[in-house]
Length: 346
Image (cartoon, rainbow, N blue to C red; front, side, top):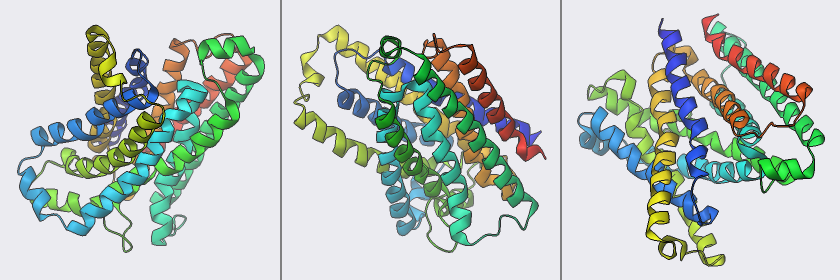
């Protein structure tokens, strides 16, 4: 029952994550760098503190008693993840919600799940849990490859006019390179949560401190999010502020009419909150996994993110006029992704 609850909790987070870009698309008359950092303030600064405050008793004591080096390492991994989050948004600009998220999250799933055990020197083929982790990631990546192939088929079958209607800035080659970078760097979030045993401490030590203060197992990750997301915010803030200056878009925040400003702030608030919720529910779901399979929770999150992002892609007509064969290939890829999440039941 715990395993099923784990998948369901992570699925709620995935549905939230896949939905975050939908309200962001409602932002008007702001440049990308302007609305990206505003939603980032919500998702990376405000939301982590609010959710941690209401779910973690003794939050101040937990933070003050956590090892400083572990906190700094968590922020560092967060900063690297921030590069991934930054390019993640760009990948969707050039490839669309469905294809952009699919490719980026595919690399994120594999790297984020396997990097720590490999660096630690673990023999993943020597235990049942290790074999299941490798199998699950392999199935997940296979599903992602099929979804990616569907994206290639769509690109070939759609006219330039159709591509522009679905995704105004569609650029396949540029989008693919950015999505790969986004995936690898985004996986640093997983490393920030767990650290690398025997190599570098990070969020794992903060979790241990939270546990020692009696934090409910469902919420031990919430104090960690404060620091890993702060690191991500720093990276994004520096880049977006640079673009504001370069593109002379600082005026975005004050030049629009009040009704548009309120519209933009509300949709950024909604989008940022949805983005954060993926990690809130992920932490809850991961806590219900067997100890030997905890690292596989990251792969489950990525697989379900891709599933829900492509559902949104269909609803937003990104696959319209792509052809029956393309949609069939896409559906096959999504089924494989769903199956990959149930490896923990074996």
